[in-house]
Length: 466
Image (cartoon, one colour):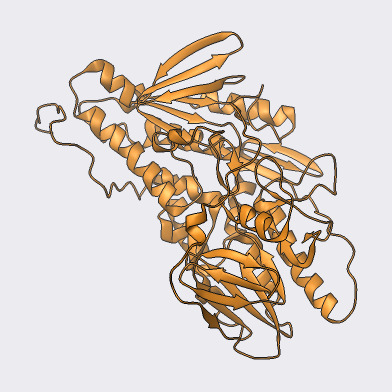
């Protein structure tokens, strides 16, 4: 993964985020006397825990600052115009509406107080818990250079994806409307920092867009003149995958027109200029669009838990947990998903991927039910079902416990797995329909720019017929 420098400790949530002049209002349980399970976060870990508790003799409160569950693995397709946000998002209330023991609260948790066992929301509400599951995930990390966030957006939220989409398509529009050849080439240069699955999938999707979808859409530019560069700090892309699959992914990307630069560290991003260090050599690139897919850190909840419970964290801010995913100091508080540092299986912590979060969420839900019956459950053990990344049309890599797949068959497996894990039927249907249309026509149907592209005084090419 791309590395530049790491602070000793990730930033915690600002103190001002917890200060609220609103009066405290207690949110009463729907059924007093029931064991109260509060889940913070409606991502994969939180949602799977809530669903597992749907028939348990407990009351579940799911709190999220958004009212929807987002299928993050397909966010890159929103960023490149292949899908719309609604295709990969499902309302949490709708998903859980059949669970009569479950309620959804929209709000942002700003504090956890393990004494009275309450969580505080930013509007002054407090919710009591008997068992607490924290599943808030992680945010992108710029290795101490937060100023890069303005010029190199990451990809974790719908807003991130829409901002990426705006920048990508605005770059083509600006290139179409400039008479300066150097500026045009800069605008047609796209850099993705980070060669993990997100970076690889973004690079492949951009190549499909520039070299196959857009060439006939413009009159002053040839979009096949675009440069797409994928920058990775390690010696190969997809570092968690077996070397032979990384090599195949690299080959497929280069066939698609992506320039892959490994063992390259980004040392500065300023305007359209990116500075790289490759060994002892320092080079600069001019790029109109820089997209960030390297590094993660705690967005704030890990810091809140550390302050209120004494929980330890790793360098990225992930909370170190016991082998049952509980906090060492508070056995009724659990951390699952990307925010959990689970180092009880193998020689490194479990990766921050959706299957890990799903299994951890289900496990904690089962553990709580066992504990209420004074029964025990063996420590959590992640069952690796494999990892996969798509590169482009008929190109993907799949690493299964029993096989390694590439090419068309891997691409088909990737399609099937993502359709299968989409939460609601209408999402499955919409995504499948959109993919079939994109496959047949090579036209990405969601190429919308919803914000202003040109500023006052920007040079434009003279309009011509056609």
